[in-house]
Amino acid sequence: MVQGLERESFLSLDHATLKREITQYFSGMFVSLRIPHGSRIKSRVSKSVVAEPGVAYFEIQRCHLSSGVQDVNVLEVEEENPPKHDVSDEFKLRGGLCSEKFIERLMKEDGDTSAYEGHPYHFVEIPCRWITAILTPECEWRAVPR
Picture 1: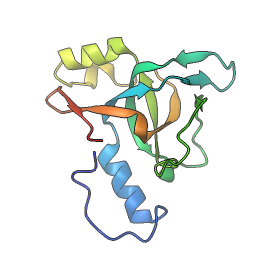
Picture 2 (picture 1 turned 90 degrees about the horizontal axis):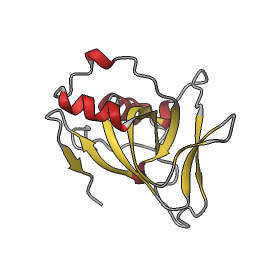
Picture 3 (picture 1 turned 90 degrees about the vertical axis):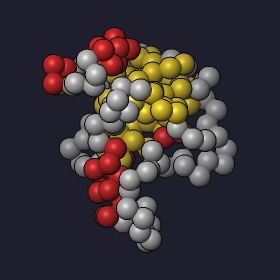
Picture 4 (picture 1 turned 45 degrees about the vertical axis):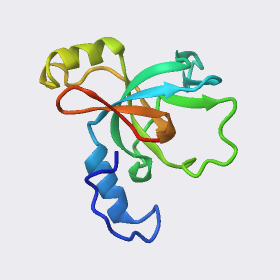
């Protein structure tokens, strides 16, 4: 996923250049997620579950490091058993859940999103470790190396 980012020595995860590059590179990218057993995505208000363990789809808006005070996440991730020693614990991406129907139409249209701009979804920050594949510009799924 990070192929294409400039290779610089960043001082920290809060470095402005790193935030900008992550956001510029990932913004608008569609990915598939594997929501682990014991995890879910819920509404912050009603607490109803909107995505259960299994496959889900997500459009990345930006890295959580570049979130602003105006950002409102309508959904939240809940994990019953998060990894105990997760070096990527704080590496999350903000964006919106996409329906399977939307992704199917997107792939049928060879990635042309113009007809679907403004498709409805609610914002959430997801752990990057949930991402399993990236939808390429050629509308093919490319697995994320582990």
